[in-house]
Image (cartoon, rainbow, N blue to C red; front, top):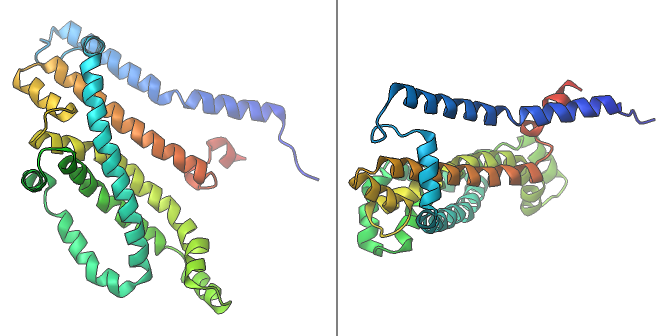
Amino acid sequence: MTATVPHSVDTARFRWRWLSSFDSLILAVALLLAWEVGVRIGKVPAYLLPPPSMIVTRIISDYRALLMHTAVTMNEVVIGFGLAIVISIPLAAILAQFRSLERALYPILVASQTVPKVAIAPLFVVWFGFGLLPKVLIAFLICFFPILIDALIGFKSTPKEVIWLARSMGAPRRRIFFNFQLPAALPHIFAGLKVASTLAVVGAVVGEFVAADSGLGYQLIVANGTLDVVLSFAIVVVLSILGVLLFAVVDLAERLLLPWHISHRTTGQERA
């Protein structure tokens, strides 16, 4: 006979999840209120630290221009992030299958990441012009390494005993990869994607700092040049929202694809 969970227990769990989901929101609101009150009481000039209410007002008043520049930056972020996914994960799978190739390429990949992306951004402009490609490439390079390393660790995390057993039963390498190595690697892959999702925004903005005539990075340079601190804060807020949204999309995909993983178990389930 299957044990049933009392209705009161289900209700308590739902209520706990509903309340805990507002913890971050409550903390954020408290910090914003403290910021607002502190600036007002301390009479801090807006050109040094504008209050949140002034920043929100500026976002609303300039929403058309901000939306236009946000669309440009978001396009660069999504393309660079997607390109990193398409290249990093298959490359990690290949390196995990061929250890001699991993030993040959891994030091080169590590060395390539020691070069500051800000230093090579002007070179990309010289090589590829002032269009979309340099920004996408910088976002790609910043996202590439975290995804590659986490995916490679994931593909190599399958116990050797499992692989030996599958081989002894005549399973081909392709089947071992899709049935054992790929499922074991998915949590690591999503961990790398979460890190890279926030770095993609940084990469796109760095590219726009160097050479651009649109985008939030370009608009931030203009705002700093004119000492428009309120607009600078507004752009920073929009960039933060972009990063959070992209992170949330990756997190949602992980929850849908890996509902069994321990990171998505609720406190109530663990106690049960």
